[in-house]
Image 1 (cartoon, rainbow, N blue to C red):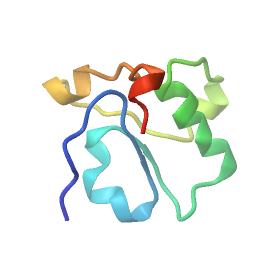
Image 2: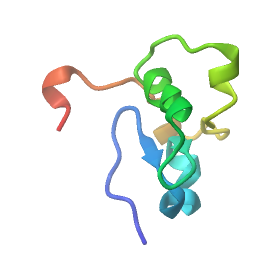
Image 3: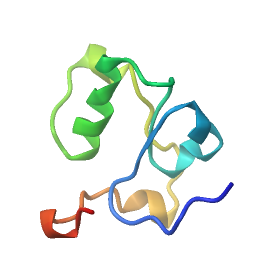
Image 4: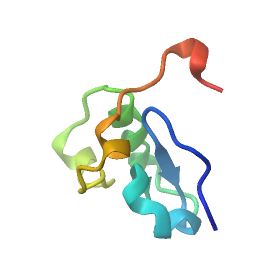
Length: 78
């Protein structure tokens, strides 16, 4: 029902998280198609091709939580 506190780049994977899609990079499907994992690379700051870019969505709002899409330092990844 509710997302935990979010920090850094957020990738939401799967149809069950559709209602929270504006909270980060959203990959639809259950499971998502392999090409959609480009969303993970995009969230980590890696380049993606134009065709890959069509396979995921990024937040459209400019809220504070969305503005901080920087990926956390490796020691912070859990």
